[in-house]
Image (cartoon, rainbow, N blue to C red; front, top):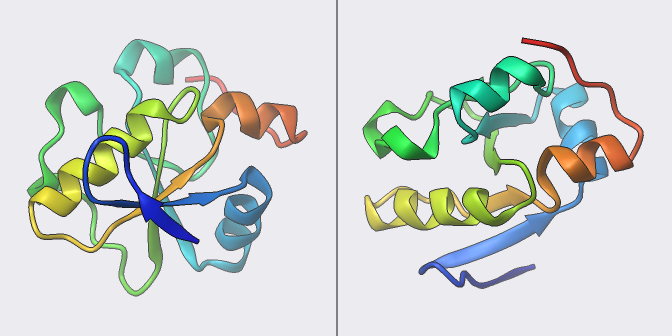
Length: 113
């Protein structure tokens, strides 16, 4: 369900289970907005990286018909990224609740580096 984003625009909260299923089905492109040092420590397999500190909506990967979903550490920066994308005129409003912390809590694998 779409609702107001505290950072502007609209936001749709997806559970880690929703995101994992969509990635497995090939219907979701996950974009991780954490910083390089965080990504270097641990990442979600298959996620694309675009750090929020250098966020440029024009640099977002083409989702090629998939749903673009933002992720971060806990779910705050991903909401900010969605707001920035919408401010640039893009339709992206989905983020993963709980970020990589929620992903791991749901029992899904991560990879190093």
